[in-house]
Length: 569
Image (cartoon, rainbow, N blue to C red; front, side, top):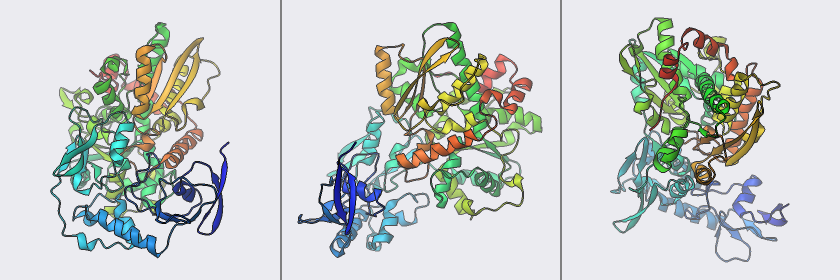
């Protein structure tokens, strides 16, 4: 148990844990201190100097993010002196920001603008300032270096991911954040999630999507990922973890979209195919390792930094890719629609999904033509912006008919196992549920709590028909590096390994609403598990629509391979 200390903040006596900073204690007690460079996932930088406080007995104001509280401290978080210092510091930061930032379309995650209004900083006097700093693109990520305030958050986030793609380089007497040529970006978007000033963002595609919405010759289909339903509400001032599945579907339909499907149904198909691979390894009796394949950043991490493990990646395609393939084959044929008229847009929590749909491994041939299962990817934030642009307030939507808020058939009703894909451990748990079903294991447990939660590495053992599987669910490629290094030494340590590149899994993706931290991610994940708990069908294998598709379409190995599998090199 932590030692307790007693401090006073703004005249209020507070009992707090020893070792916490003043800022952490203030946050715990709902005392507001402005911050910019601070992020609870990272080490305090104290570079923006907006979180200044006065401490009795210390002459100069101190940064609360980096000052550990001591027993008996008396702290004042705001006065005329501090307010003036904060205003000056913020204006100096704005002097480094590009001139059009206040009118920038997608940078609504920029905390500078919000803080300027709150603190009263005069940003207008810097509106004519220009800097000759470039816009750098790496894959689906765009870095506008003219907005950078040199806080270093992006560099640390990238180092935490064991990628180290971002670093400092001296140019024109300035140290500037830039890519390291000898490293490869995995497009996880954690630089975006941890940048306080919107210098990083996903390459936007919402403008390309608006034109087809008005084209009567196109059938536009949106499909949304499992985690979106518990995160997008934050963009409309709803609390983290609010379940907005119905509002999300209704809002998308108001854009003029023809059909809305649920990628969680696609997760049911991925689960079944991955579970088949798991069962094959179990029945072979040979020690081998199967690694999850649905996270494109994780797959790229293995390809670039641990290529010897590429053969261990499951061949099951990611959920939105399988569902896109089924839409353009099974569903198109059922509805008598020319697949070339169909435009599939995936709404994802993930920046790397924009890269994933361009990979040649995801293409398939149908009726002699090469097709992409998915045409565009929008992040959660992009969809939120598109809705706001069209005057659609997701939080305030009212429906006159239940059909207005329900995903369309046949890909609208997932199992609970499909929904929990959005949380770290969800893929593993879903696959185990279905594997035990395939093998007719008696008295199957539905829940596997040991692979749930926010811990970086979660280890468990699963007994299936007398055979014990050592399994691990990992989130964050920094943690994955540790596990892969262990597997190099002890290859039989695990038989099944799930990895999601982002903290907490997809619920912490680089395309999700900002800000995000461990507490917010936990609420998003818990909401997904609550949906699962209330589902009648909780195992992918038992999804009636999945069974129908396998009976009438995915009924031979060649079709299954074409739609549901790929191979990485």
